[in-house]
Length: 120
Ligand SMILES: [Zn+2]
Image (cartoon, rainbow, N blue to C red; front, side, top):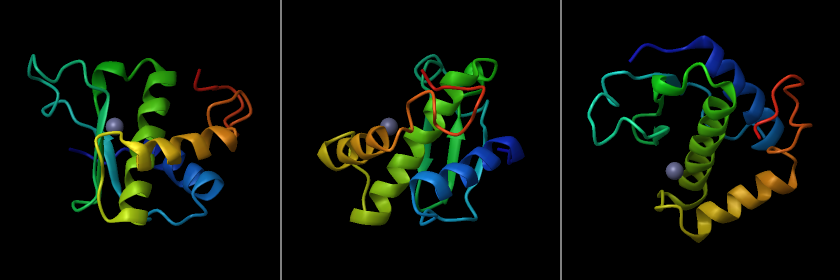
């Protein structure tokens, strides 16, 4: 997977804005065509791997910015869960708590700092 600088810029921006800049700064983020090529995985959005320090986004959604950004911040929430708890759940309570915090901070609103792109 090749690192994507645009995705990394969103990551860095949100890391400062919503995660107190506490998420790792050297994460590799990119679109991974190979990973999502199979029938089983082709509809997935993305995946975070805290040990590999990597976020992969499914390129299928590349032209739909709202989905890509939503997937990215979702995966960032997984990394935050890992930072806090040393593990990532299957979207259980600790994950949900982080998503709720992000919501309360306005991450999913029109005023999420991206100007032209609200996530919803
Ligand atoms: Zn997830």
